[in-house]
Length: 363
Image (cartoon, rainbow, N blue to C red):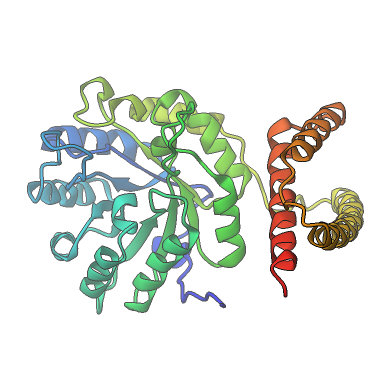
C-alpha cells in the first residue's frame, strides 16, 4: 500500500536553520525558576531553536513525579515571551491539546506510550482539527513500524501538515547499555517509505545516561536525520525525573560543538566518480547474491520433494546445527560479525522451512 503524507517542510514554519535542528529543555518543568533559568541559558546557544519541557508526565508507576500540570503552561508562555524560542510539550489526550493550544504552545509531541494506542492518537487528532500547530510523533514503545506510520497518518488526516517523527528507541526484554534499543533499521525504513518526512532523534531517551549521548547523536547525524531532541536541566542532579540523562546547558553546548556535521553530497567530482564506481560494484554483487539465493531455494524445493517421497521430516536439527556452525566459522574467517551471519542464515533457513512446508502439504 502506498503511503503518502501531506507535509510542510520544517524550514517553512520554523524558519531557516542549520541541520541538525536542536530541541532542548528539561525532562519536566518542575518550578517556574527552574524552567526559566534553564531556558535563559539555552537561549544563549543559537543552535537551540525549540524549548521542550514535560508538563504532564506519564510514568510507569504511581507515586512518581507526574508533572506540575496546567500551571507549567504559563511558565512555557513566559519562556517564549522572554527568550523568543518556540515551546514544545507532550500531550496524551484531547484535553491536553486544548490547554496547550490555549497557552500558545508552538509544538506538541505524542509520546511513545500514547503512540502505541490508536484510540488515544485518534482522540488527539480529533482535537487538532482546524488548528495550526506543529506535531511531533514519537515511535511506539514496541518496534512496530506500521503503528508509528499509522499515528502519523491519523495526525495528517486531521489536517496537520507540520509533522515531525521522533525516534526515541524501542523497549527490549534484553538489557543492553542503552535504556531503549535504537533499532536504526526501522528509522532507515521509515526514511525510505516517507522521504519527505522529517525525522529527529531523541538520544536522551535512547541512552538513559548522558555518557552515551554524543555517540547516539553522532549516529543520528551520520544517518542524515533532521535534528536532535536533547534534555537539558539547569541542575540535573536535582531533577525530579530522568536526572541521569540530562545535561546542563553548558554541557549541551560543549557536546554539540564536538559533533561532526555531515552533508548529503560532497560537491566533489572525484568523490562522486569513486562513489559511483563502488556502488556499481555493490549493485553487481547484489545481483549475484540474488541469483545464488534463487538457485539455493530451487535446491530446497528438490530436497522437499525428495523428503516427501521418502516420508522424512522437514526439520533435520543435526544438519541445521552443522550448517550454522560451519557458516559462523567461515564468516569469522572473512571478518564478518557472528550476529550478522547468524541472523542472515536464520532468515534463509526460515524461508527454506516455509518452502518445504508448502510443498510437503501439497496434495
